[in-house]
Image (tube, rainbow over all chains, first blue to last red; front, side, top):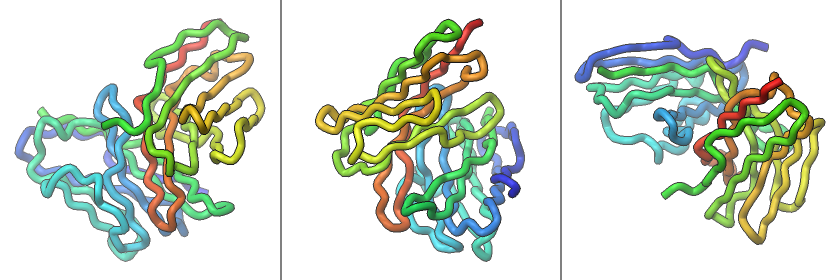
Length: 115
Length: 114
């Protein structure tokens, strides 16, 4: 089966611009997560979708970040306007339940650089 | 406040040696502790995981040791190989229904030299 895919792999934008990241989860996975890793730090949770509904968005840094999941399939994460501290690698993961555990499969990430 | 602390930040091991990475957690409610392996340009991939009702889990050359009273767990890689060179992340989560976000450590960059 195809893995989690993310687009673009890299994005370089100027402060104040808008960027939209896309994630395509593994087919049939109802759960979709966004995480971010700022250089040298831990991978931090941003939010969790179950199908098209936001289950947990406690990790979203502020209202400049907007996540959507159209029809419970792919998801987008928009940053508007981007700030320097938004730079990092954004990972998407999807999961299904296996023996009472939701095993999360990660995409390769989108490296965002804000200059 | 960092809920999962990981050490060391980097580790250099000779081929055939044992690699040990340690993690400590704060929240005693965590009930699932996975380790992820990440190669350059790839996303993290689940390597091995443990629940707090067991003290050790072994899969091939990889072993998790878990100490519930000390709130610590560690990854041991036996007979380390150059192909094991990667960044390793410990994590913890609560297996609540539909609320299982992963709390990660800061990562350990492992280099295994021939």
